[in-house]
Image (cartoon, rainbow, N blue to C red; front, side, top):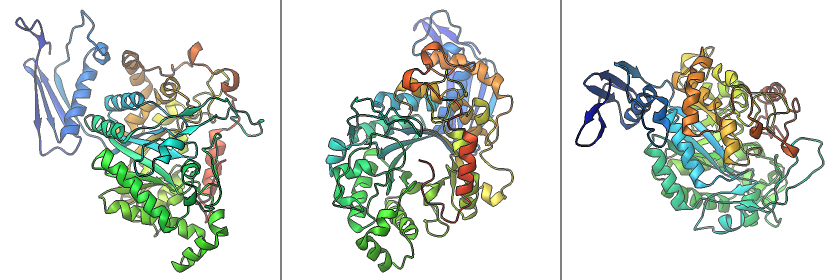
Length: 506
């Protein structure tokens, strides 16, 4: 189909009709293209949006630029397209605690997610290294906890500790979150905020130490990576505090289907050592601090449920029979715990380190910028089966989707984020849309890369980094220091352990 010329307007116009089709499922669509125009039928607004993205892919590459280039023929081939996603959760995770990104970069990620039909933006807003959202009820959170005076430049075990001496910080106002959420919904993306508790609590306790398991101990926003023993108390004042924070975020983000409450890598020693926390545990009839951990997260999930919001947790929070049945589990430590959670009736969002942690390098070479380990390639992501064929149909039905993670200890800025995310995120988009590994993906990706160029994405070339993308100085990658295969073997052993809630990686 070619655009007709409207002499009065001096520009090409073509008939595009969009209609709702009640027989199509959510996010499903069909496109019919003829000489007369384009007809889009969709099950809902998201389906119509995705039809628009497919139509854009049928246009010349210039359709992905911010402005039309002169001389481009805006034509699409006649034909029919019918499509629908296999999985409802097609996610991207941004760690904004370790390194803050300005609001414009979050909005840009929403745009890029929309192009690739990704629909869940998981924002990691609180951790040991920073608190990233305004709180009107507890203003010391954004006044104190959103800033650290320095950041470690020590990246591997055994190195002499060193720091850059450069202040780092930032936070989003509640109005910013309202804007981000509305912008995302207009592009069929749902924001999933995360306040990671009760561990990873150094930043919270820097502002409000009385909420800690050791209420008389002072804390600072952490300037290094790894697991901290800082942990919130599970007593009623902490629940009241978090209820207020949750309400502030829910009010800002609008109707909120999901809220991530973390639950991972909790060092429970201070709970066990506290007479007050132990007495509280015994009053509840709970046998161990691990049981108290599960109870605490259950209380938070119950609070969210009264707001019409489902809790999401990392897999350490999963203890069969103790979480709410509607709590969604993210099994980052691999398929063993994913299988157990699904078999117990929990919906799971696949988030395994291999191959969905994009803070790992794509090649084991010193020309890569520094990464936590190596390697996870585009091909590894494309080969991943988010719905395991060995699971029973009932277990497979609990696979809500999958999500790639951009942990930011070694992603200090937006350019590095582009390099880590793309084009691996393209593979993640395909496997979450189809629900199975992407065969012959390399050929399709090669054809898609010019679109990334037009969008201005500074992705990693398939042949390796450009000279200006390479690491240098303390940001030089150390090949083989942390092989992802060794990490997965370690996590596999941990998730077979009876006490799988204990911290696993330092």
